[in-house]
Length: 165
Length: 411
Image (tube, rainbow over all chains, first blue to last red; front, top):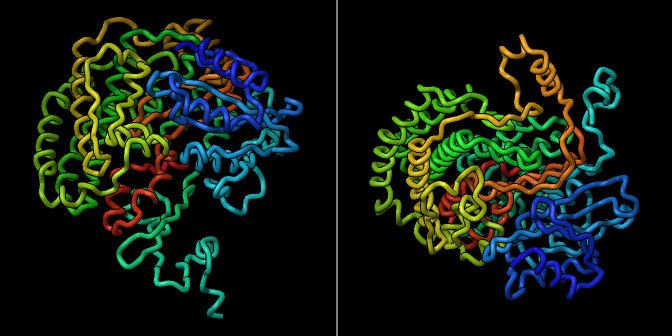
């Protein structure tokens, strides 16, 4: 079972909805449209030979310069039987940060999605309990978004050219 | 006046720090945030029907320190100090995991000797992690002496850390590209004394005291059972998953740092109860001892760091005399070196399971995004399901055997 086979199988079943196939450091990475993410996750979990039965990680990313796809949700799946990993990405526009929940496929997605909501404000539709998990309830912003600089902006001794990104 | 102080839901209860009052026969019990049995700061609001737990609600985040945000402004070598504050019972594993992630991004090949030293340190850390978990499980069931007895051995492991890196708890051990210094003769002598003499003796005695102890076994057999299937759905990894009968170990599935060179077994339980978790950890200590013995006996000669000028600090005497060394020293310390762009997921077998690092680099000096896959955070959400219908004293034992570390939970 190679990445090539998995990619061909996904293309055969999901057509143009799955795109941007890559293989950074041997890990098959692909992007899928939002409306097909749950069916793809279920398909990979139920697949007879692939058996991606383990959700390793679910997290988000903020790419403010990426017009129309500012937010990403990244799923890492692991097929424990075949010992193959796969990375699936979904990109969302900042005007519409809704994505269906994966808790219907894996209960473990519950806290991972709450964490992603907590830090990026991504809304997982039909999540059973989408509230903040690590930050306080009263917080009114999403701290891992790039517009919140880590350092105090009024400080002049720590200029970006020397100390910043 | 009275009505205001009687909270009707969880958020009111949290704000007023009072139990929820409902028109049922259930009572509400706060387990934590600062309760000795939680071994860290996190809260469980338990709904009790007499002695039995009906449901539980968890509140976490009391020691959240925003590591993922802080890491976005730090040069790579400064992030090591963040990682050892996650699972502080086995910090060297976190440190090495982070170094290996960066080395994977940079494409650095670490010499064999450094990899073997890393294996020794990671296995020592695993032993100390399991010592804490299992001996505290004894304390939580009322057996204090085992804990006191084996903590002497943990102290010896911490002395070895001191010999290697100078610190005990937050170790900041190793560097990107290798180890900061070679194993000293004192360190080797201390490791040998530990794994050939004192630890096997102490641990054999600990096992004699606990493994077939009627009182202890009655308390933990068939308590907190979880099936392998359910454990996988909940994202369990590490000893807790293996106790449920699934033989997933990152060291074997995706060997890193020369783990393929060593002969060891992966202990598996089959009930997934507290007793199996206890026994799996016990057995893993013996396997770790086996790995350290092999690594020490076959320790390869050669350099203990890779030739990676841009990340590995040059020796201090060179910095004073050699122009290039001075330049590199300055560039590394000031964090002026840009990493290549890339997207990496690297996992190591931490004390509690798969510790993953998801690193996105955009070619800057700091990560664009860094996410830690923290095993405790992921499996702790199964806790209410595991303690449904059990008594409060069993709930404590289950929590203890899951080995939830608050620092890792909250990152």
